[in-house]
Length: 396
Image (cartoon, rainbow, N blue to C red; front, side):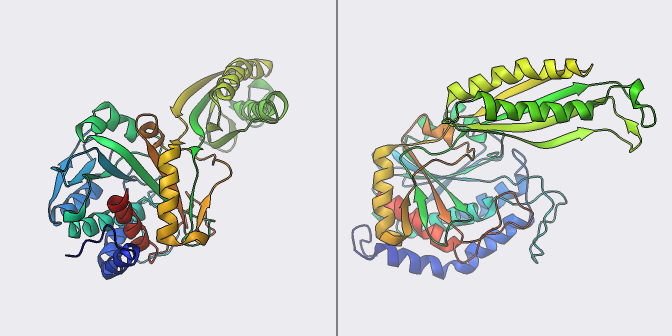
């Protein structure tokens, strides 16, 4: 086999070889898509990944580190130096699919609506490409298929179980297929890349009564509405306008029948911010304000505030190298150094606090947003993602 690690057309070689694997890569993606599983429950998914990795030459497979469903592949274990880790996420989200695909989810109420099926297929493709060029690796490459990215902190579990030390991880890379970015563009930036992402639960207790006599009860839905308005006032009237923060309540639960004022209501939401100081200010204000708003309406309410994901920090030197490599792979016009971070949360952030990391976005060119019931990733883009990850494995 020719020494591909230094030849000028390495990107073309990998793209060509990845295109030869397109049927297999698309098949992996569709199998993952048909059988979506929630965080820490990715049993079918992990078994498919293990089967695929074990069919590849010279890849050692490690199962169940940090969580029963995690899968880790190692190529070039005997090589000197710290390893390069390529990480993708495995879990689906609790959404009823509406794509109409022939390979739509077989499980009601669950869907790969964030592209994790395509991420896994791309990393399997990269693993296969690198196994073909294993004698040209400079150092070990670790393929991490991580469970429970969607709010459950799978990354934190793996770190706590010693993933970084056991596999001598020196640098880590993560990526996400991203809608509303033109097809095939790479976007990344040095330093702060994502917001911290926290979870909020507000429990409200009123007094149940019949709809015909609301004066005899305390309506927790009215209280919930006033709490939501009051909380947004923290952002618009108490926070420095030059700071950034978003509070969104995406879930409300109350009542069992249309003509009864319920006894209780629950709100679930999230805070996104770039500053821990801003987060702590908003957290304190919510914890003080919410019980008082409820009390003013003769109800009781409390706030359960969970500090969930920290901000993701891209290592400046590593990111500079990635941008340079991306320009040689995708072309100068396809690579963008982002001007500002994004307000999305990402548990890759836990790795970024421990080792030099880079996280990047690969544009799909589609308008349907993440966590939509109609979300999709163009299947002809997945082999490109596979070739790019393999390129990083050979060039970094």
